[in-house]
Every structure is written in C-alpha cells, then in structure tokens.
Image 1 (cartoon, helix red, strand yellow):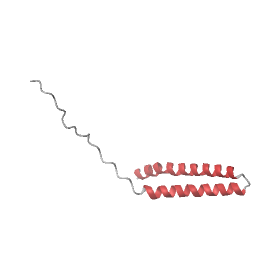
Image 2: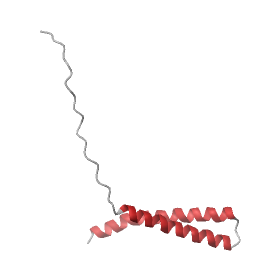
Image 3: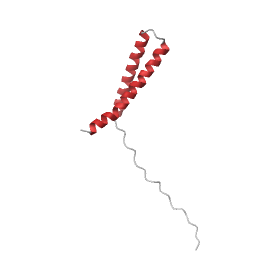
Image 4: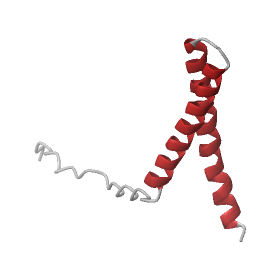
Length: 86
C-alpha cells in the first residue's frame, strides 16, 4: 500500500551547555581597564604640561590606553602558560 509518509517529530540536535564564565575574569578585566586608564591619564597630563595642544594630548592618551590594555591582555596567556609548567 502506498500510504503517505508523515514526518516524524523532529528532535533538535543536542546542544552542549555553555561553559560557565570564569568569575575571576571580571575583577581582573576591571583592574586592566583601570590601570590602562591611569596610564592614559598620566600620559595626557604630561603631554599637556609639555605645552602640546589638547588634541595631541588626547591622541597620545588614547594610544597609551590602547598600548597598556594590549600589554595587559597579552600577559594573560603568558601567566597561564607559566602556571601549567609548574
């Protein structure tokens, strides 16, 4: 007999539960941002004391913030590698 085939109830593919966010990241990320902001403020203040224009001081402060933030973020994998070697 030719009976129409009814589609079976499709089940969604199994999804893995998302990994819990490491709660230690939040305070360290906050420390990194605050440290970078402190470096940026110091650079901007020193540029302003040097007699540079405000635009030049802000640009230098922004570059200092970005550089300090990148250095802080680059240090995380290095520390993780050092901890694994112990």
